[in-house]
Length: 263
Length: 254
Image (cartoon, rainbow over all chains, first blue to last red; front, top):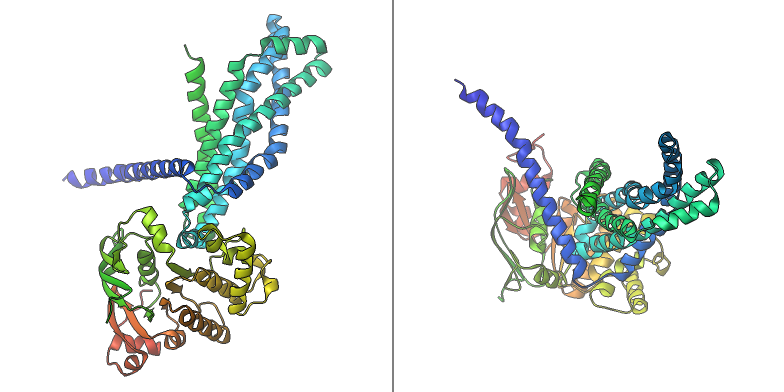
């Protein structure tokens, strides 16, 4: 008598689980294929260049605005927080550490995921549903090499560059607030920033940036590549790419931080 | 008779529980133009994609020039594709590239032709399909449906393939433009001496471009023969299809 409901229950439980793991397998294969094709010729240098410009150059304003306000707000917050312990002088180094380790990489990556990941998913998704990807194949061109590898390569190269620029702008934002609003002595602020500057803070930020770049490109391309069913499918792909890459960025942000700084 | 250019034996393909191809046997001779007719959703496109290696069949064999296509490596597939050209139903032109870059795509990327020479060649092929040279620098989105089809045809024949596939070449075109495209298809196929496989449900088009017609129904080839034989056949399925009648053995799933 109980068999039926149990079966029903197991089916309810099993179906999403099977879907989840088959998706995960599909994604793993996709990632493996993408990486493999990043390292095997032919390389479409024109396409890589176009992506570098698209992802890097045109993301500069977004990254600049994000990081400058992040630096400014950190200066304000840490000042008001630390003044309780009379530790206001730590503001410069707190800005330095939080911008280079966390804010510049994570916030820039989230912004770029919205800007670039979505665009990748939409473009590749449209190419999928209008058969342009099949057309590439019939013209003896591997879509992974022509479409996906250039995006992954460009994204992994350019995100660290963006974050480096973001570091400078973010610290400058902190400086502006520190000097003009909180009344720090400019020379002291700069000296305290430079004294606290450590290579590790910068490098972890850049390592994160490269990983985030990879996540953004792969999730954008994957969702676009697998999209089906016309305009709605492309819309779903765009949404999924932004949501999934944002979540993965936050997860890997934690994991990488743990790898470098946990004792 | 020499060996067929394409030989398909017992081809099966299913998506989940939905069986699309259920044991296809089909041969296409070199230089022949075969038209596969059949209703929408009967798996005509799936058949072409299997031959091209875009989809992997569940069972069966496809020989192109006596070489097995099913289960070959990516490298061999690329080699196979260099023999083939395809005109897609929606054109499938690359909208990030200009018209001439579309036409010259295979020449530049695979035959490593210089861009300048490739552009000249592209313009020559465009003229062949009846398009003026000043179209070359436009973007595909600026063209009408008929012109996009022509550009798609130009791209398909630019690499001088041995086999050309036509996926619903006249769908979405007015009758006159359809006939123009039919003429262009015949011209370019005969001009290249290529083997052609067309899938369509447009009977006027099928009559015009076919050396031989095969009808696909419920995953099987249920009839094949010349246009003349088709008009005389007693096969009820074929008769219903060519007369375009809702009455008969073919039931439309609504």
